[in-house]
Structures are given as structure tokens and as C-alpha cells.
Image (cartoon, rainbow, N blue to C red; front, side, top):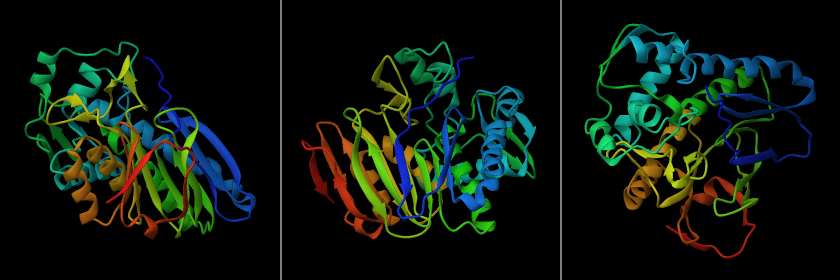
Length: 323
């Protein structure tokens, strides 16, 4: 099996003068970074163990994971963490009218084979067969047992890293950590405040820098340059309603004072929604956003200043719209 390492979409540092120790490991197929004060360095290993545990339970790339066993047997007893992740996924699916859909595994892992060594671009007729006209369906939960329809396959990749970030954030807060950063590719949570850089979706380096305003800001991003086959047109951001990758939004970054689980799912959904529908969805929930479209156009939310300060575009040539 091919071991996929995603590119880092964010870099982050503490917004305060105190230096934090940084530790990075490859878990969940990406670089996981935790930053903590030196006097709390004993918490690095248990924090990384939480990421490893969620990977063991949710990964579709591990045959022994609970999700993989459920996909194979169609009925399985799940741990509390996996069951919570599944319930949250169904909730996000309903909130986004199916634009986030955990049941797209037949498309993402069976047809495109994202993350496996036999990745491919499927034929149009195959996508027609497996697209999801009835999202959020085919899953039945009875206590800790879950049963899924024979024609679906679960893929929690659109929210799994955000969910793991939340668990680590809760753990560190319960331990009394006052300053820190939790970074999992496109998902970040700041303990206190952070300075964040967003990767340039059009080229090399970073394109945006900002400082979060308040403690606990959740940030999530997703882009078509993150994972694709042969060209960015065949990217991993699949619209469940069509079975096809989206192409108009190059990168979506969301900011919120809620949790990373929902924000990760919302980022996935908004990435494939029609533009105006996505904007209306975000506005209705008070979520801040930075959307990079094709042709170097950028849309900033009108409430972006509620989440960040000292926002700077580090490169010229982008057309910025605030709406």
C-alpha cells in the first residue's frame, strides 16, 4: 500500500513572545505538529498518541481500522470515538445538504483510489453509477453497533483530522495548557493566539499572513492542490451529487470559534458547493472565510476582522473582493 504524505497547507507560530517547543510526526498520512511550552513537554507523547489512536480507528488505509472493518463486513461494533465521529459526520452531512458525505468511499477509494499506489482517473460512466443522489443515507446505528448498506463505503477523510485536533485540544486544555498550537495539515487550533501563514495556492511559498484575535480559534483549509491524480482537475474534493471533482475553488480557508470537527467538514462541503450557496451557508453560521478562486480572485468574508488582525497578502497580483 502506498503511504501518502499530504503537503502542509499552513504554518503557524505562537502570537506571543514566549518560545514554544515544536515536535512533528507523520501520522494520519500527514505531518502532525504540536507546539507546547517547555514546562509542558511531557504532554507531547500523549498528544501524538491521540492522533495515532484516531488513525487506527478511522483510517481507510489500515485494514484493521474500525472503519475498514465496517466497510468490509457492513456491520461492526464501534468504539466511543469512532461512533462519535460517525454521528458528527451524519450531522454535518445534513447541515450541508449532502455536500459533505461520508458515504462517498466508493468514489474516493474504489474509483479514484486516492492515496493508494494504483490511483486512477475513472471513466464518466463509472462516476454516474456511484454518485450519491441520497446522501446521509444507508447508515443505521443501534447502540454501539453500526450497519451500512452493501452499496456504500465510508470515507471519513473529510473530517477525521479536524476531529483528532479537537480531541488533542480538549486533552491539552484539561491539562491546563495556556499556550500552544495543534496543526494537522489543513486543520489548526490555537491555544491562546497564533500567527498563521497560508500556502500560495497559485505558486510557491506563502500568500497570506494573519494573527488570530482570540483564544481557541479553529482554522481549516482545503485546496485542489492538496491531493490530485495527474492534474489538479482530478483532485480529491469530490462533489457527492455529481461524483466529480470541483475545479473553481482553488483553496478554501475557514475560521471559527466552534470546533475543528465541524469546520473541517464545512470546508470540505463549501469546497464543492456552488459559490453563492457556499457563501450563504458560511454567512448563516458566522464563519469567517478566505476563498481563492481561479484567475487569482480572492473573496474575504465581511466578518474576517472578527477573527484575525494584521492580515496581509504577501504577494501582488490577486484581486480581492470582500462579501
